[in-house]
Length: 330
Image 1 (cartoon, rainbow, N blue to C red):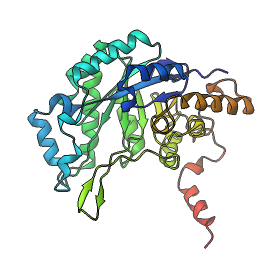
Image 2 (tube, rainbow, N blue to C red):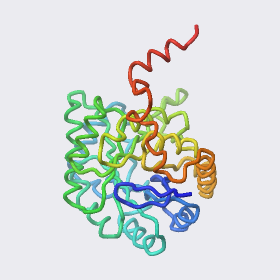
Image 3 (cartoon, rainbow, N blue to C red):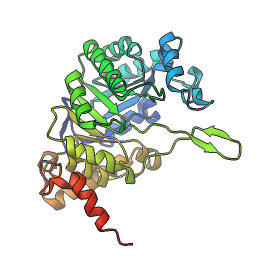
């Protein structure tokens, strides 16, 4: 059974990729991920707050975008909250690349163009096979237009593209008003892949203490529908690769994303819940499904249910919304 796939030009022996998480802070965990069949590993994120906290422009962006709540500054943890510094991150890449054969993708998380350039180059020099840029940006400024937000993303992509030769993936949020056009412009700006979708860590309220909570909720399989929709729409219309990174809890979600046209499906929550060796179960279940359907390779069914290939393309658009409502009984 051939599970090979290509993601932003990288040859992978599996479409199941480990997404950015603290699990990859330990080299032994990454070795176990490779041993359990992972096609690639996206390393834990290097945050701009770690490397440019003192930068005046960064502070200006914080003030402009995080004034929704009095405690909003707490959304961006202090430097001491991170226990992995820049030097150690670069050393982790070097050490891991000496011990594994699968692609290692660095993850850079920031909000200002200036926060990306030097470190993108250093990540490439350290041996990263690719770079995932995670643009965590909450446009809370009421004067900021949607066009200005999109332009910020494009500027960052262009600057990083001019800095490195390795492939670049952009981890997107789902809140752009014209997702298709935005995806096209990002391709033109130099992105090699889009990762759909980023889950912003939204605050919750403690109604007893009247404080803002900052707790993390793992993704759930029920969350796949939005990225499934957009991967199915974009598949076959863009040159760049598509990665799914929301709600991948089992082989079932992997299969659905591949049918929609994703090149890879990324997971971390499932490994937190079930352990890294759960990757073996996911691969076994994927192979069993393929065998039952008579598929000998990922390419045999990838994109089979995207908007181009389904018998009813309207299923992706407004007509299907009407059908769903008509099927609801009062």
